Image (cartoon, rainbow, N blue to C red):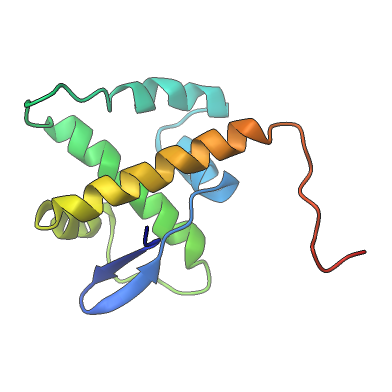
Length: 122
């Protein structure tokens, strides 16, 4: 599974972690990460039903937060709408990045309370 998205002929990394969650919390004006549960609940897709504009906006903001998080040292020449423009013409990429996001949330909850060791330190 690729953790990149191609926008305007340039590949951008996507990384979902605390940094992207913090960005999402700020965007949705949540004072606690648990407040994002209500946002993520919007993504309860019904089989065979077209996603709502609200759901598409939520996906765009989530993916944009992941792109921002992975590319902190550059000014991105697009916003969440630019991300959705790409995802609308590539639904497989949308599914792939949502799966990556979901997996990152599962991995984060699995390691909750555990500090990750720096592999460089012994």
